[in-house]
Amino acid sequence: MTQLDRRHFLGSGLFAAAAATIITPEMALAGASPAGWSLAVADVDADVPEEILRLVDGKVPADCNVTLYRNGPAKFRRGTGASGHWFDGDGLVRKFRIGNGRASLSARFVDTPKRRLETKLDAIVQPGFGSSRRDGAIVNGPDDTNAANTSVLMSGGELLALWEAGSPAVLDPETLETKGFKTFRRDLKQMPFLAHPRVEPDGTVWNLGGNGKSTFVWKLNPVGSLAKAQILETGRASYFHDFTATARHLVIVLQPWVQEGFKFPLSTAMAWKPELGTRILVVDKDDLSKKRVFELPAFSFFHLADGWEESDGTIRFDGCLEENPTFGQIAASALLRGEYIKAPSPMLTQIVLYPDGRADTNTTRISGEFPATDRRRAGQSRRFTTHVAGYRQTPFPHAIATWDWDKGRDDKHDFGSHQLVEEFLFVPTGSGERDGWLIGTTLNLKERRTELHLLNAGRISDGPLATWRASLPLPLTFHGTIA
Amino acid sequence: MNNLQSISTVIAMCIASISSSSIAQSSSAALNVSFTGIEEKEGAILGAVFNSEDAYNGKGAPVRQIMISADKSEVATALEGLEPGVYAIKAFHDIDGDMKMSTNPYGMPIEPFAFSNNAVGNMGPAKWADAKFEVKPGANAHAIVIK
Image 1 (spheres, rainbow over the protein chains, first blue to last red):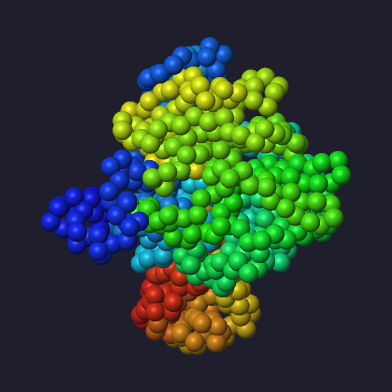
Image 2: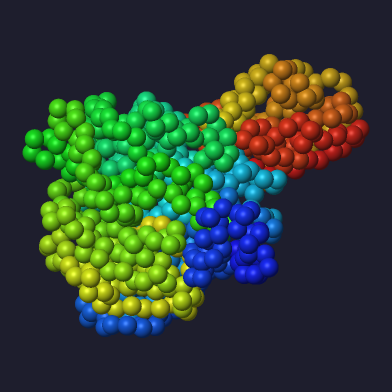
């Protein structure tokens, strides 16, 4: 039943009572949603040619000159079929450019083998994180199923569209044209490369690529070339979408959401085993054989923020921790059917690893996701974490905030229930940790348009300095980068 | 995606068995096999021709082996003296010239491979039923896209 069908069904007074008895409250909530949040996971049928965005509020700072690249799935349905999961749609890379007092937008789908095949067949056939393999599928390697839809990284002058189980796709940073998959070394084709590389202040990139009870460790030089490529045994086949790092260590969080065997969709091959607890592996960047292990009670997670090390060796980092992986297992699939399944909220939490082997968590009791920090401070101590917030009656957040770890409070702006808020990134203009702007996008459900916002990073509660509106709505993105 | 490793394993077995391939029997069919879509013009196309499902599935030797320099986007070879009958071909593009189907550190094939009829597998080699084709008495031609 499509979203429209369901609303029609529920809207009919004659059937409303009957409907309440046969569908779950969660489904009713979705069907009753007047805001139509399913625009967040709607399809885009074509690339978006460059357009000048309309300034609808505020004033553009004269010295603002920045490009924001964002990536997210934007094509889920073909023929009579649909992707089985929010994470499986085709990546649409968007380029927002602010300069000379104006802002523009263009967007282009990453031209992957999956997209080519499914366009030709007019059917969703390739398997994925939450999608089954269907007739017509061609799977001779991970990159045949690569959706290139999760994030972007500027490395060595190339714009890379990132997924997590296969290669980055190389895009032209100006035209967003796809050049093919990135091969860092001939024998490293088809290797997993997470969408969450950790970038040191000098541009050195660290990344992982999970595979069963091991992970591949990537290190790229600031110019984009390969510096290190090595398999690291983790001892547990945990699913990880992200990891973190200090200046000296890689920190790999091994949640008890573990792969057991192999089948498509991948999410159905993973089991939640809270009795195992969550294990954290700390590995020396200079000698991957030097490992330490920390144990914590079970939690699930998608995203972590940069970590750092104190003079006594204590490691601190924060993440958005969930009680269990309900969101990734079923709720993110239900979104594509217009259904809202309540999953445990991600809670912004600091994790502390002590030199004596103890580990601890300090929760903010704030629900938040998509943590973002001052990238100049990667691997160094910092005070602030920017995150989306304001989860209420839809599956998506409505606010942007920065948590102050010293004062224990949020500086927050709520865009309102008609706005779905995406990740915001920090653009420095001075040396301080909040000297700069936050730049990010929302999907305005009332106007049915995507909006671009610029805020003063030190005064978020003042609201946007400037808001621009596109001529169309684009589905929600996951992650982006500033160039 | 560990099962994808089976592609390379099976193909490696198939290629390894080429060295023990049998001598062609006396017969009256010729088969011109062409490979198209070659993107990296180096190395060679290596292939094995089978005349039974068992042999195709690794329980026997191929009847012929193929080795053609991959210096153009389209290359071909003529197999003479085949018995008319049903055949299937497995092939890969040995770009680096090591005579092996190269894999990445997780065992994924990283050199192009293909099967007769351009049949595709499901995370492994194409099935005999999809790859088999008939060779009739006289001249025959079969084209395979390998990229």
